[in-house]
Length: 77
Length: 415
Image (cartoon, rainbow over all chains, first blue to last red; front, side, top):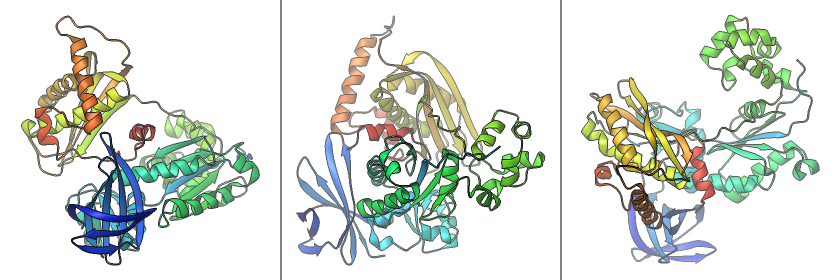
């Protein structure tokens, strides 16, 4: 079961997310499983389901504030 | 009747284990494992989709989570994430529109394409196009996603063909192979023929799909006691009778309650929330409605429902809530409710305003429009009635099961 995190993070991006800095640690992203979008009111969010070698993460990019959030983390099942 | 000798131009595309496959696409750690997406992850939650691996163990849509875990204790159960599925649907839609503009989504995971006279078919053939679509889905949408492709001269047989080899199949039913395929199918393998229809057919001496195909129309009409007998005769002969699109006749919302609620007071916030959701969709589509319907399904297996005509077409959630609440009082629930569904019918275009003698309808409309604008800007339910607060946690974003009407709303307004 994924753990809800909902914390601001720094994400390195080039075409797609390459790394996430969370709790002062950089996690290299191996794979973007799915990229999808949705709106809440007028705000468009980009969601990235990504995975590192040990974790699956859900990242959210807010196109209004240009901020990234780590929404969920799941360790390798 | 001779089987239709026209070339196959209809293609049915069905995404395998839709919700579960999309979750496996999103999270590579789930791939190759039995996964289920359930309305609730608690033991009583209903499984909405099982991955290919879970299906192989006998875990199917409709089972409870506890039953799935009884079959396989390590079953991974996930809650639904509707926007993932809607986005994959939109991606499929975009990809398919490269082949034909004459296509219809039958549900979130099923499309029917008519390729007749389209350049891709003139240049190639249906099987190659089917292969190309499969390859492109893996390359452009997700490498874990597989589809079943069925090809036939009509929509019905294309769907049957799509179900012949799951997952990842590609089959055609045509004038050269239909006898062979029919001889390997049971009556109940046909979509639309369940036990009761099979019994009707048995009663007329029809025991196999080949008998069904060869039966004269009078015998089929006698079996079904309706024109449906003729439709089945035409369908199995490869001719088209299913290219009919039904327009929208109602708007509704329902919820499966995750906890035991058995009182009118407990259900009313949920009803208020559902009614507001339904009415905001109704107004966004430019309609009013002159009827309301309420349905309660109880945990003990019984159910109650009632519809009522309203005195005039309404657009305001408060008017619908009053009528729905009266129905809820009539229902007088006294045992735990499993599902509650509210819908409105008698749709008419919201183009003219019927002024009221006892209330300022124009003022009411201005208020409703202002609230809709705030919610459109800041997100649904930013401004909502106090009576619906208790229902917020119970009425979540969900994809209508098997339905396609809600797809209109997000395909016309994609993110």
